[in-house]
Length: 182
Image (tube, rainbow, N blue to C red; front, top):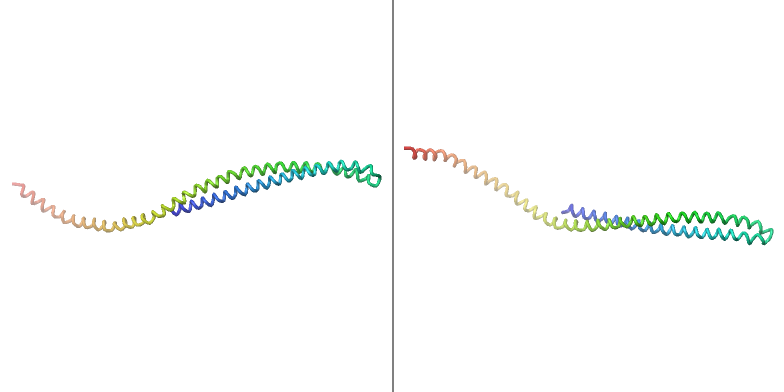
């Protein structure tokens, strides 16, 4: 009974641990989702910034000779920023997919934990009545053990009684045989 109680409690703890793992995986997946979305937004923002810088260089050029040298470098800065934005954007998508996969992984682990908890509860409950049976069964065993010696003494007494009866059997047999013969 105590073993079943311990087994039920162990299953309960295992189920709770699996639940916590499933919940943690769910939170991790959601965080990765948010990170991927944030990277997508950052990539889009950098893309827009790069495009704006590409276009900003052109209006600066006509302002005159002292500012004209700024137009070309600003225009050239736009394309690398656009490429950086696109790269960050591409990085966001797999992170989002990873987050979704982790969330999907966490769900069955959570369900497994709940199932193990449900399995552990009746096993623990089964242990209690078995524990309660332990004492009466123990007393019954003691009573049966206690009968062993009186039954052994009874057997010895019957053996002792049998010996004189066997010894009497021979003379009685002789008497019976003597009276029957003419």
